[in-house]
Image (cartoon, rainbow, N blue to C red; front, side, top):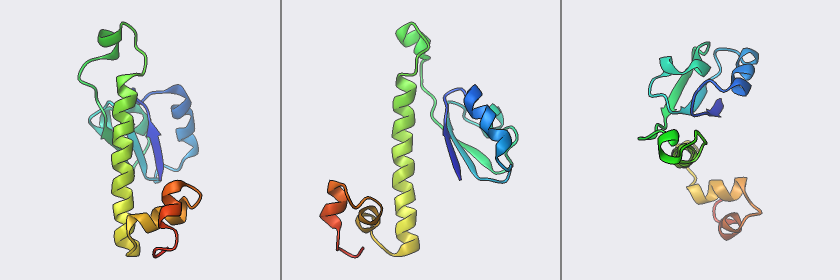
Length: 120
């Protein structure tokens, strides 16, 4: 699976990656778009979808320039939600609680150390 984060959905660097990916690869795009068909990045993907992260007011109106500020905060919050949903899914697949999965994948951190040896 590929995960892209782009407000516009038409970032040149990301569009350049797409021809190198088979269209069947699951592709998730965190973007301001609310539909897959509106996202240029997914134009050639047959297995892609958007996780909408629109902002209620354009950054140009809020700050006087179109710089990624509030849009990056929204994308970060959505990314955190995606991470939590993924860990819950892994919990169901493996039968292990999130702390055990986290300890296995991040053993050197403080959270991993706290849960090391508890069902890992």
